[in-house]
Length: 627
Image (cartoon, rainbow, N blue to C red; front, side, top):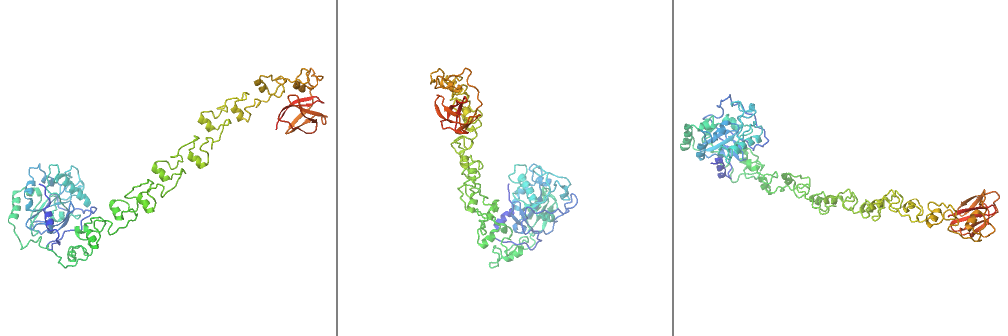
């Protein structure tokens, strides 16, 4: 059978009334519920081992006390008990083997059945106190044997140092021994009182790890036992308890334990803080009549968690369910007031907390952009920085997963395939259609830049790749001739050798099928009909227009004449040449210009090969005329 404290029913029945501390009893209570972080005092000396004579004795009048349960319910003894029922207070802890055995279904002698059968006959008040056999034995009750005992969960435990540790220990009992636990224990209560940080219940009522104290309606101890289970296992003791119910002995006209619980507040009593409790009652209780939040559990209630208790909010007219009322400060402007953010665990100074939605994915949350006045749907607002100058701001690139420091990402098109994307070429001013711009290097000088040659699969170090043709047939590929500044359609470029001095270079004559060593090949003109071609006669010092002037068998004599061509003319070095006649004859034997020798002799003939003849001194030579 699962039971709650019987006093919980009394609380509900008395809801709306205000009860004060009972003036007939010592006050052992605390004005405020202990905090989980509050420290717990060391236990007082309880006597020698197995000496359990401490605590209230039969005939003592107990003190009224104020505690809270594991579930956080407030309990004042004089307010909660029913006057028609005796009150049974008992204590225990997780490491008390007697307490464990009392509620063990496997034990031959157990008070479980008797307690559950007589549950409604008494005010049952179970209290969780200090650990009886904690692992740190020096902190255990002095009258307990000096050895540790594991809790119902099978683990050893340390003595409580804080309120939270005592709450945790009590929760272990409820989880492993209480209603609904799938174990061999059946502790029939679904809540249990928690002894105060100063151990007031242990010190005044028990001074033993698992005792029992029975009080009557006047708060007088009528029975006590060293061990709860042992006491209830005795038939005589059980009958005594039943007689208390069936044949009560009233020592006064009224039950002293509840006689001073009348309403101290009249209809017109002053209530300065508007918390529903008159000043007189608050002064009696020791609470602050000018603070609506100082009224026991009522003052603790703060539904919206804004730090202003519900009573205060009701007094000032604010909404107890709205943490932003009455203080609606929103420091970061994100639409959540500071108190609301603190309650949610978010940062009241960060507009992106708690809502970090970022519609444009620019790294600035929507609330932050609203505060700054930027466009939360534009990734380039408020930060329009474009590090790689590709026309897309950094924030937009980050939002789209592209690299804000790479100009070619995402605009990576490379129209001319020169290795530079179009966007970079636009930035540096080069052509997106010319692979040689901006890379103009031409290692082999063939007129094709290296980039083009690589793109086309040609050899950038070979001038004959790709131009391996030889238009002029001189044995030099066109690419090499172009690389060296030669004329790729002139077989005499670069080699101009003219062995027979007929004005046709040897290569040209070979390509044409002529004889490069015969000056009469290919021009065999013989003006004077003497059987010798005109050019041969010119070269050898005879007249091409006079049959009587013939070549000597030994050819022309060597002359000490040196001709130097400079620009549009020539000069000669020889003794006695000044004033002598000269003439310039083309390769057909025609005189194209003549004169008498001066220091410098200008010529005006088309570029080409000619024969310079100084007939007086017998000097003739082929000269190239170039401009």
